Length: 309
Image 1 (spheres, rainbow, N blue to C red):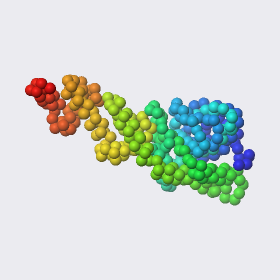
Image 2 (image 1 turned 180 degrees about the horizontal axis):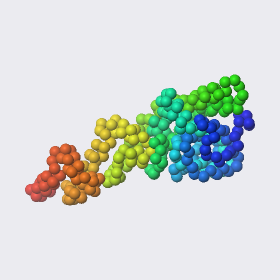
Image 3 (image 1 turned 90 degrees about the vertical axis):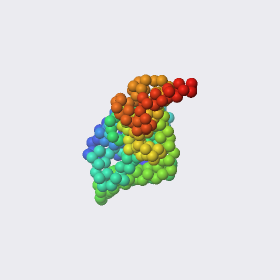
Image 4 (image 1 turned 120 degrees about the vertical axis):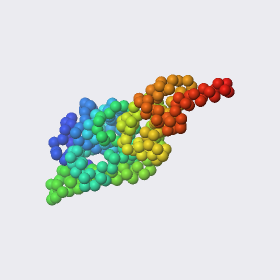
């Protein structure tokens, strides 16, 4: 790559262009950028360096082949640990308006945002931005990442050219690069999704069991695991044949039943295991077990009295 294509690093974190900006950076001195968020999308192609990315307070080391996608509103910053290697990366900024325009042309441009389960990035359970889209990290092998770099090289070369049709060609390069990212992620997902889905489902089940007394709405679960709530709903329907709400309710009713049979007061069990409304608990219990909680408790005690166990 020609030296004149390298951009001198600037700590500026706002766009000058209305639609997009594209940079190639190669830094050989420590760079410090404070925690920040954007009103636009950032696509970050990591090439080289001793660097980690901090997203919403969680730290992720980077390696060659990583593509990091940060939607608007997500707090992040990079942390350059040493200058033993130059810190090289492509940074692609795309305005929300231009992204919406492309997605209006074809939903294919937004596949990577609609399928966060394809991401290689695993977030811990922490509160995050109210952004409806999530950050994602995809790691590609040398061949796939080489294709993305080829698209990036073509775009940056055109940005520095003075050839006929430059504006039209740049527009094609931008849409081509974005489409290539979505295509590679879609193809990569084919081989990873079943295993990733099983792992996510197991983690959600464990989370539900550990937080059964708390709010367990789809929105809460989506926030805890940084995945789309519709993806969670689909997982439960596919794995259990019932909705997430039905699964949680059955789990709560089972725990209430066990507690009641062990001597816990019905009202106490109802509150303890996440039912804030007794009438809702009563109807659900009777529908699930065909008997009221009071009647079940009475019959259980009568059996103990008769049999002595």
